[in-house]
Image (cartoon, rainbow, N blue to C red; front, side, top):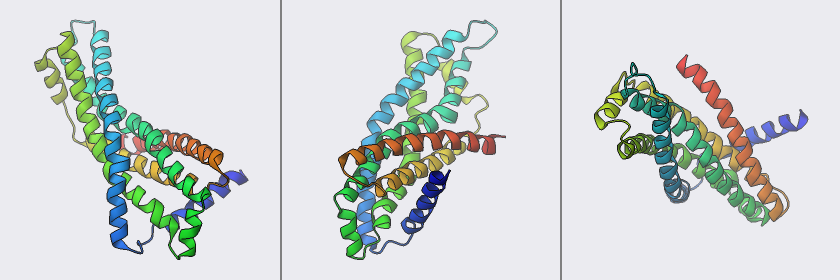
Length: 247
């Protein structure tokens, strides 16, 4: 219990240092655009592949399980869109990003800690927490929702491609199913979850990287902890946000 309270206290104190005004705006903006590249654009490939195949699998499984003539095949499009928007894209893709982006952040900052680069920044009077972590947090908060929107689109597209290739559902039925009782609020719900998950990924990974002590082995352990704990928090907050926003 003491270790948990100590960790939470350290995290809160670190976040107080992170969320301050950058000392040099020009340097912050340069770092921010670099993080867009490293944390966002470099993740686009894996997001696209997983989303497309994920949508295709959901569509095929739905079509396979519709064995009653009383159920319209347009339900395949409806189920695919709802599943991708409500859960698969915001949650599953965020878990993937927790592994890819979170481990990168933790290992990058952890390496700077064990090689005493962070100590050098502190000696020069730089707020190292703000300098290193804040651009990553802002980049994740801005770019992750964009990735999720792309993921949703590709997931639905992947379902359509699978139905066209297999001939299980016509394009007309699939598109009609997507439009059935479509509520724009579910997209808003998905993006709200994504923002929370992005904050968790960036700050938890930044924390474990920043407090790393030791050498290369400890950097690896910090990366593992960042992925594990951010994934657990994503699943926990997924339940909490779903309860709040959909009930």
